[in-house]
Image (cartoon, rainbow, N blue to C red):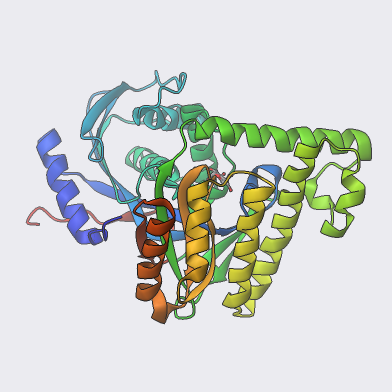
Length: 399
Ligand code: GLA
């Protein structure tokens, strides 16, 4: 991932592109960040605990109102324009095109009964697509904010997140949980976001970047049909929960203590047993990570991340040889506190926790170790934590 341009340069560039596309400047601009997930993987959709951290890679959405009852949008990343009539946005079946997300957001906003106005939009992204950093949540959140705000509606962050989750589920056919959209809307710079997905409640947890830095390592791989694999995992967890309800009268995975797993899962089909073990123990690891962060023990968080990855690999089976190679190479690199896959898995990126003074040497060693193991080039990005979605000032005409 190339070092991202600073916000001012990106806004200037996007503003010029807007002007070229529509013959006038944008009136407002919005940004929403991508995220890493420090720990709590595949736990959100069963009401579990997660600990993501928004990163300084974001999506920008520039907008200006227009008289016609239609939305025009230009994607800088795809160098492509699309147009939608207002009031007619049906999410439709996912086609795999980026504009599915636009249709998803438009139909989610309209289904909320929000009156939209015609407008022109341009979207620019510094979140690499398909690398597990939640580029789609950043895209839908920035876009929904722009569309709602230009029509005079102020959406609360939680409502914005829920709306974008629905948009993404419809647009991409991925039955995602709430973690990514919460991270994109509610995060705070200098903090990780601790979310209890059963309550939809959250807490900002100070994350001291003088003690530990986040480094994203993109494996340069993405498994085809990862969406289908994701939905399959979700189904498996739901089937396991049905079984537990029927056989044991247990109606939440949160109700099982790790020490009671053997008893609770006795007789459960073996594959479902593994999925449940991962979720129950992962929830416990998130709680332990929160306690560790509160005590400033980044070493403990790092160790929990490594255990999380091992469980994602062997119990939940969402890792890949490349992601495993990245984690193995990270463990051997100087300054490594912890490493795990980040997000859904099936390719994409790992999140690494690194001692700040060793970041450069860590990256060199990790790139080398990964190349040796796989012959592939990892793309390494030290990141800073970031705020959730916000409006940003558009640059004045002389820029
Ligand atoms: C994707 C989904 C999230 C979450 C993660 C796995 O990022 O969008 O809701 O389930 O996978 O933790």
